[in-house]
Length: 254
Image (tube, rainbow, N blue to C red; front, side, top):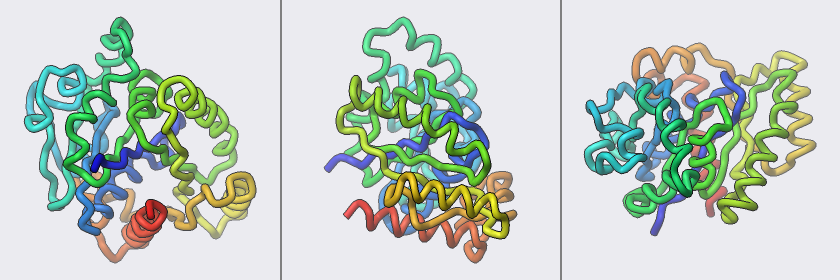
């Protein structure tokens, strides 16, 4: 059976995309769901966040363009059920190189078709843009999970992303679904966070996950140690929130 492919996307930076990609993937792996994390961001923060460095000349960029096989590019992580397809800054070149290619939006989908039967879930971390790499991720995906920061402008920027998702669904990937919206960096002591959550739940109802990700110092520290929060501090509020997210996520699949 083919894996469920979830793209984590938001064109706004600093909303918790990479944190969510890494820690949702890790939490699914801890639940013994075989998971592949794909770092599709040239900043390669998801790769460093799990303590992995790509093999020279064999990373997500070379795999995407068919210059190396998946087995050579995919790395093991500190979790038995989690693998990583790492990025390097070379990935910046993919946006330019793909522009001149036919069916340039389908490169990732074609490559993933060769390996998704090996996994339960594939989690794709995207860059904070709606460029060609993100379009590839949306075209390849089963569904999209949108991290939404609890701040004043969060809902304003959501419209552009939802419009892009709709265009991809209509023109490139008719099976694409909206997995849900995840509220991140939530500080429920503030009126603003409460207002953003209330407005999101009013507008999007059941699409908004019950689980919210709190602001948490330990969650912010863990990437600098190359560890998902579950391995850095399993008792922290951040780790417990991502465990609940994984549980809710799995239950939604059923």
